[in-house]
Length: 156
Image 1 (cartoon, rainbow, N blue to C red):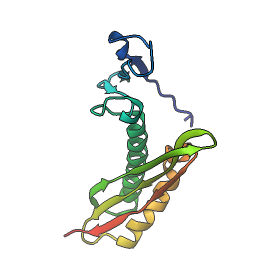
Image 2: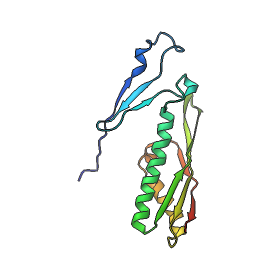
Image 3: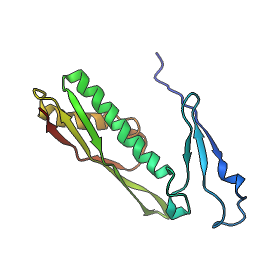
Image 4: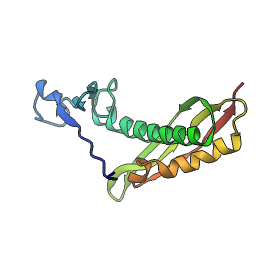
């Protein structure tokens, strides 16, 4: 089995229907992203960059990708190690700032709150977050710090 995986997505600037890029202030930032066999995602720029605040922007999508990758890695590890997770929520936060003359993400902090079933090991449940962090291929692909501040709660 190959360790190489390929992904394809299409992006179309749908804002062109409103007006061309005659000046920075007037053109629409709306776009549609599609992946074959999946629902389309309609996005825009962040409102800071004259986008539509009601649409997902690339910054949102990067945070979601990091949080989802960590969660999926964590759940896989828990299932293999006998930790029964009954709830998982995350409140991810990213920081963008000017560095070296470019605006960029400089850090992301994931704040997963995990509920585990009675009888599951809370020490192991906390430790698996570190392993999930190292296994998350999205976190391994970015050039900024991705931290996690996990909370593990024992359920009934």
